[in-house]
Length: 118
Image (cartoon, rainbow, N blue to C red; front, side, top):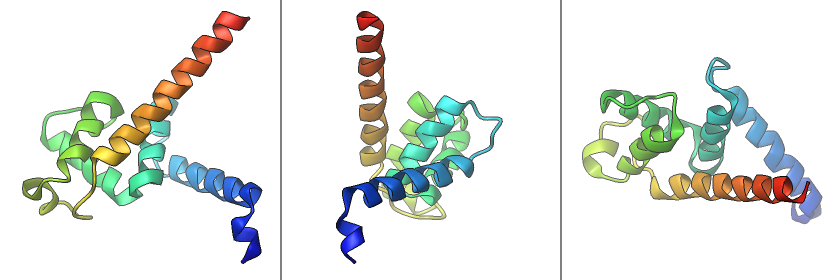
């Protein structure tokens, strides 16, 4: 039990879980997109990302693109007309959408800072 409160253990477990999510998506999907899907799965659950990908296809959006496509679909899973037909049901879709966007924005800021420094 005390190991659960150890930050190093928590970080290790979180990274391991994130890699497990990453490996669940088709390797033919570009790595950056698979990372977005894995982050959304980490936040909301793998099943909700699957539902969002199916919904994106039904909406005529690209099920293999996060930003502007699956990102939009996962947000719709908070509305009854969409989640009632989804296999995994209701999803607070705004949360994973914002979570992935925040991480992407931080990543871009870090890259910009590194490029400016070196």
